[in-house]
Length: 435
Image: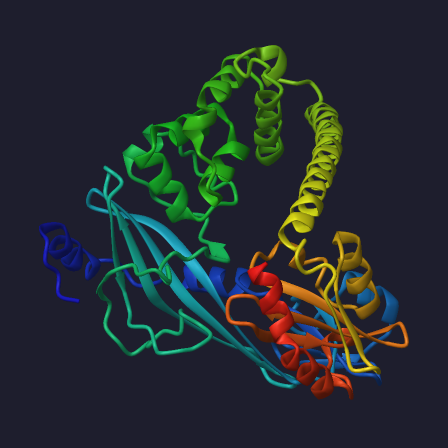
């Protein structure tokens, strides 16, 4: 992308002045970005995957646990028992440096190719530069990314290093596997508490945090590293807990488990405790206090759930009683309706208990879906020799059969006969509607 702003134009020129990797930096990257292995066959032949030297295994168990040392190159190796013979890996190497007033993070794609019996091959090439101004604003210079369905950091290593915009994939937010120990930092970072330790955080995340956020700067200076790391890596809202955090800082209390401490403060607030009181905010045994309040809340929730279930059952019973009364009133004109052809006997379900028995016997939802509450429906039961065969629903608005279902909602061999019988006697239903 063509640089547009003054800063973009400036860092584009400054980027060209950055030095190439030194031999020491290359060697450090190749040594620390990858683990070093020895390949062992079932016959006990060991091959150093660094130099290709082979020798016979002598202490099988000890080598499996402790690894071994190559007698040719002296490299300490971990043992691999596998039939695989070719190994490829890629990791990111970072150099932290400065250029003019900017903090610069240089990321290198480091690749390794190993094949049993051959010396390892390494390559390294710069792919991303993150430029951070003293005020925390950032710009990115990087190579193009290739199209890939599964990976967003497949780099076009032949493309130019140009200004890029960091999109939603965060392809340039790299957490390097290895960082070069010799680093140069701008005075503003030292002023804001950085002393050379990254505290298991990505350099970019740490630097932008302490330059942009005064609270995170305070956490770093106060040694509250767990909270700092938690606030950077998660959606933890510092401002909601800042008063309690300041209490910890003033009382010299170091929070070692930020996630548990946050949950503990939430529990204190749940029970109405003072979250600004050192007695509560700075517990001697955080785990024990957290578990005590958690158990107390769980027991309270259990009691409330039981109360809600009792109340729900009471309300359900009241609704059922109302439904029974309403059904008897609404369907009073139809309750004595009987239809038969001498073989099939069809009658209206008399009450809510009949709906329950019908649904239970026929394995369908006439009761569970509360068909007895439907104003414009009439539910009938077809039986042969006293055995339920199908349940029929009639639409009272247009006097049509909505459905006629046998057991498990399946049609029976008498389905057409039942439907025909009801249709022939629909005038009996119409007569009771007019009554």
